[in-house]
Image (cartoon, rainbow, N blue to C red; front, side, top):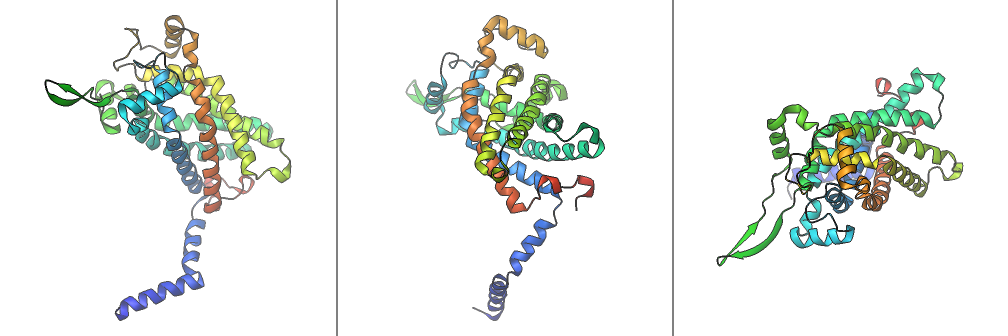
Length: 345
C-alpha cells in the first residue's frame, strides 16, 4: 500500500470514527425541502408496493377486459394459465410501465395532498380542520397526479392486456414460437398510440379515470383520517394502526368507484384485438357503461373486484410501511409542523 492510499484510508477511518461522514449525510438530507422529501418517500413507496402485487394486478386487468381465454376463469385458474403459457415473467408484463407510472404518480399524489391541504387550511380557515379537508385535498391531488401520468397508465394497460404464448410447437419438423406481442415496451406503445391519434389518443379513457379517482382518492384520505381520529393518542403512531386504517379506506374507496375502473380499462384497450365479439369499444364513458351493462351484464362492472380486494390490502400495507420508514429516514416533520412549498427551506 503506497502513502497516498494509506492516507486516504486513514482519512476515511477517521471520518467514520468521529462521525463526519454521517454528519455530511445528515446535512444533505436536512437541506432538502420538505416537498422534495415527500416526493422521494411517496415515489419509492409506491414503486415498491406496486411491484409486490404485480401478478395480481396483471390478472385483474385480464379479467376486467375480458381477454380471450380468461372470461370464465377464476383468479387462481388465471394465475396458473399465465404461468403455463408465459412463465414467471408473464406475471410482470406491463409492470415496467406500471412502476414508471406509479413512482411519479405516488410521489405527486402524496406531495400534492399535503400541499393542497396546507393551502386550503391557510387560505380558507372558515372550512375548519376536519376530515372533510382531507376529502377535498385528496380528491384534487388524485386528479393532479392522474393528469400528469395518464399516458403511462395507458401503456401499462395495453402491455398487460396482450397475451403471448412462449411455448414452442413443432411445425414441419421445426420448433418455433407463436403469438407475437403487439407492442414491444413502453416507448413502442406511446409512439404508436400517438402516431395513430395524437395526444387525444394518449388520454383515451381519462374521463372515467378522473371520475373514479376524484371520489376514490378523496375517500381514501377522508376515511383514513376519520378512522385515525377515533384511535387513542398512545396508538396514533402505531404502524399496525396506520396499515389497518389505510387498508379499510382503500377497500371502501375501491368498492364505490370500481365500475368506473372497468370502463376505463375497456376504453384503453379499445383499439387492440379483443374477444368482445365485435362490440363497439369507443365513445364516451357513459356510452361505454351502457354497452357493458347491456352486452356483458352488470356483473362485468365488478369483474376482477375480488382480486382487487386481495391485492389492495398487501399493497396498502406495504406502501404505508415503506412510506413511514422513508419519512423517518428522511426526517420529514409531522404534518402540523410542515410548511408549504413557498416557505420550505
